[in-house]
Amino acid sequence: MSNYIQPIIDRKIRLGFIGCGRISKSHFDAINKHTDNIELVAVCDQDASRAEQAASSMASKAYTNIDTMLEQEQLDIVTVASPNGLHPEHVMKVADHGVHVITEKPMAIDLSDGFKIHQHCKEKKVQLFVVHQNRFNDTVQEIWKAIEAGRFGKLYMITSNVFWTRPQDYYDKEGSWHGTQDMDGGAFYTQASHYIDLMQWLARANASSVFANLKTLARNIETEDTGSALIEWDNGVLGAINVTMLTYPKNLEGSVTLLGEKGTVKLGGVAMNKIEHWQFEDTHDNDQNIMNSNYNPTSVYGYGHVRYYENIVQCFKNGAKPLVDGQEGLNSLLLLAGIKESNHTQKKVHLNQ
Image (cartoon, rainbow, N blue to C red; front, side):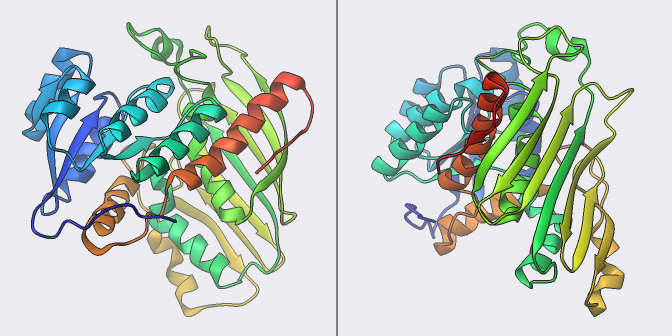
């Protein structure tokens, strides 16, 4: 993974922020944990009142125009948390100013746009980060360590269930972009993309094929509210993911299960925050304490943003490598795009990496 960042030693990292909607609070809370190293200089949202409210809460300057913010402020990095369909445009704007950029997931809802911004940032020598913060959860890190230690033996299968609810009024709110093809992309892109990323990452291989069936069963929207996909990775691992926004009456489960030759683990809770099953052929002293990594988040977003920004700080201060860069974002986007294509063609799609 590349790191185009010139270290900043003698001052704080100057951060700009685009899009002050629902997810911004998780970012702001995380930034507030890193005030020794990060200064949120400016925020931007086309809704002036929302921009002013965010700026007031974060002691920063409010803008309603991205170009104006980029021209008037001396920024080191900008977080893009605008609607999904705007991520490519906004990432390109930031990169054109020679400023490093963090984009919320998904990095794009069109695969060609994903490749375009990845290449553009490389050409501009701008570091691109993609927000997949759940990799940093305590629970997920324990699973990663077990994989790295070879405790699963040969990994056979990875499955995920995302059983959440999004009522019709979530999509119908004035100005809402949710449920639209051009801005949202659907339940897999918006709600399930973290689970797709985690499956892809834990498989430690590129997805080679996918077969998917997506449906709009109950919500009056342009995109799917429910779907399933069967996945195969280059190393032979098989996978399945089931997603719905129709769970009654509230979010029930966000889980990932790994089945291996010598181990079985299920990660559950509403935000991958609870290890529900942990069993291996070999035993480690720490196994009896593994449930201590469970925690109770206040939302499905979890607490991973704090550690995500810690990696940002380390990249600027110590020359560390980005843990989730543009290529990592593309790996997940390739699978998401394959799911959409398979549903459209009703055929298995072989993925070109």
